[in-house]
Length: 55
Image (cartoon, rainbow, N blue to C red; front, side):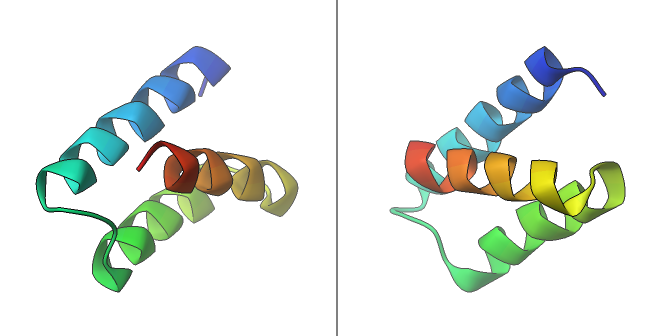
């Protein structure tokens, strides 16, 4: 998956979380599970941190 698509997905996930008032554990786990299926651990951490920063 391209970097642009992953960044756009993290932005989309963050927007959805913001609608609910912030990150809850279930939402973070959903994003984490998605990233685990797509990426290696080093890259996964980068995008998880991006998601948390944007949310």
